[in-house]
Amino acid sequence: MQKKKVNVIGAGLAGCECAYQLARRGVPVRLYEMKPGKKTPAHVSGLFAELVCSNSLRSDRICNAAGLLKEEMRLLGSLIMQAADATRVAAGGALAVDRNAFSEYITREIRQNDLIEIVPAEVSDLSIFQDEFVVVASGPLTSDVLSDAIMEATGEEYLHFFDAAAPIVSAESIDMGYAFFASRYDRGSDYVNCPMTKDEYEVFYHALLRAECAELHEFENTCVFEGCMPVETMASRGHDTLLFGPLKPKGLIDPKTGREPFAVVQLRKENEDGSMYNIVGFQTHLKFPEQKKVFGLIPALKNAEFLRYGVMHRNTFLNAPQLLDRYYRLRKNPAIRFAGQITGVEGYVESTSSGLLAGIFTACEYLGKPQPEFNDDTASGALCAHVSGAISGNFQPMNINFGIMQPLGYKIRNKEEKNTRIAERALAKIKTTVREYGL
Image 1 (cartoon, one colour):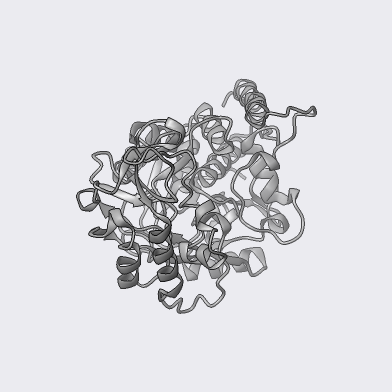
Image 2: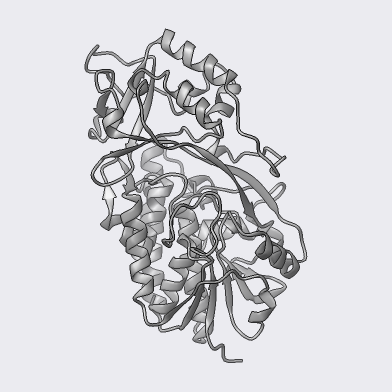
């Protein structure tokens, strides 16, 4: 049956990318977004593709799996990567963006596209799309009514985990008498580094352990995804855990002493003009007064003005290996696809990648063209394999990493060289796929 329009639910990163990929191939799209009429606790604006946890899209080097995935997405014509490259802020070897400019860019591109109809409404029933394709990209903060509809469509209950956002401070309130600009290993000077002596760290660490957390209300299960763990949870795992995590001093030399500090808290630009800084790795669910008190024990932040405190929220994802195939289709009803973090990919970049491929797959099916093959010799394809059942046991959210990609088949001792070879092979494969399938 000829499908009239493809319905995409959710105008987050995955949903906007999916809608854009459909429209650029001539497929008409109906994009549903419940904002601004209804927002989740983590959202603050009515813009599309709002970044709620960090403004960083992680490493931009292809010897890093996240950097490789971004380069694959650029080759595939990603809207989100266009926006990121246009609104980037300095962040050493990472790709960080001006949060508002990034969302404004994407919102403008989506709203100006004649093939994309914006429907400002909350979807509560998937059965209304029985004669059309639908891509559910509702994200990790899926509303209760849509969750019920998804459970009905899948026939299963699905899982959740907790995610936490880091605080933001004003640049002018940072005491630069205690801080210095640098990136690790002399890769620029894009971070504000807040050093701590051993005694200062001891005071901070013990205060963090004693600090009071906000009530979780209905979120009684405190399962936290390792990649976005609250700083107080890391501290509870041992005295030195933070020193090997967000406070690690390795690769940083304090110009005031000429030595590596005992501990370092890094701040990253939150916007282009550098008036706001994100406390890197300090996602938290401490009560707001506790955040001000405890984080104020960091010498450079003793008078910090908090423009946003850290918050904690629940994330939702499917038991994807049982429910989805390698094309992100629901096995029991292939007219329905899922994209984004709800599939069990974790991270902004991974979420966008799944939306991009879901858009390409749906467009090809809509137009009667063969489905392009993305296998685990590419980062994009490795994520498809991950969510569709390439791993067994207890399914958990996964960032892209070289461990889920096809190995080279021969040994290289140097890790960076090995990863670079895997990346070069992947990029060559993406270029071939683009050419062969006319993507």
